[in-house]
Image (cartoon, rainbow, N blue to C red):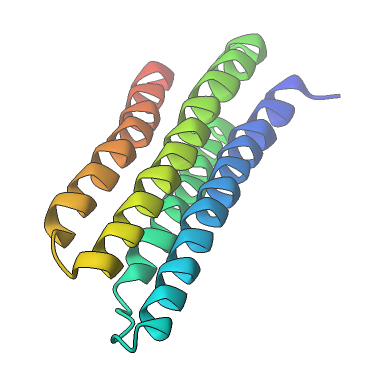
Length: 141
């Protein structure tokens, strides 16, 4: 088995698992928020899809890291450690982004206010994944 290639697969896969979990969390909350709107004869804001879809970007970051790692000549053991550590950070970022998005979706559907504040918190969660990606690429440089 090629340890370096295994490391690249983990970088992509673990980040994508986090995205799936985060999307599931925020998606369930968005659907529930829409249901509340329908029950109360309120307009169901389509903008809630922003909260549901936000964790998807961590999959993209995992892919970018995977591609960078594939072209690296770094020690395979280093690649394994970097791939696992960075993608776990991305995955946790996505999970907690989903949780923040769930709260934002619920609050926005109920009040119709605060979108910019809610999406700011979702963006802060995103920043962790971006830092993990950029710092990993720098470490590979």
